[in-house]
Length: 206
Image (tube, rainbow, N blue to C red; front, side):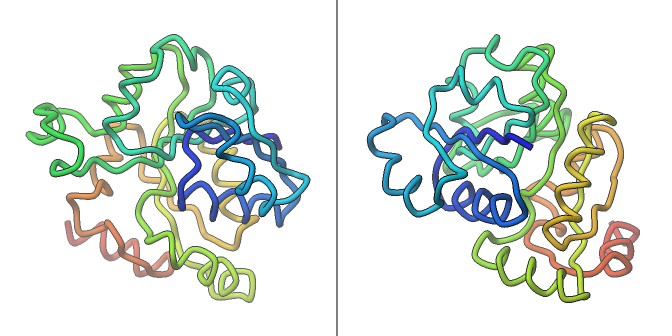
């Protein structure tokens, strides 16, 4: 699969490296210019390249891995009909006031979907500390998988669930995009790591 990333920080670098290990290629972009991406691209290897936002939007799957507030600086027409994974987390101190999210009238990913009409949005890859992803992936591939929640568009969930399994994780389908509110950064699911049974118990306790 060809996977695009908006953002080239630590989350992107770890996820992109994991995807490359299982045979995918990645295109990265950021707001600082493609020249600043070269050290990252060289580290990731030949299956990675730097590209424009337009090039990233053309990939089979696009992952948003930027601060939540940065999403709304992007052209709202950019991802019309894209399969879009929202890996962002809304953090009020950093991102400012988004009343609909703070009062739980909308999930943060619903606000993302609202900004990109036509995009097929899934919330995923936002709950675990990125520093642990490599280790948890290796443990999963060795037979001790951590479960990761995902929610949103049914077709894109199938793609993302397949990627999760390839990386050694167990996908845990929470439902539609509104249900992603259950594992945002302001919930007990944020930074919670467990197998499928443990994650199911955690959701049941909410």
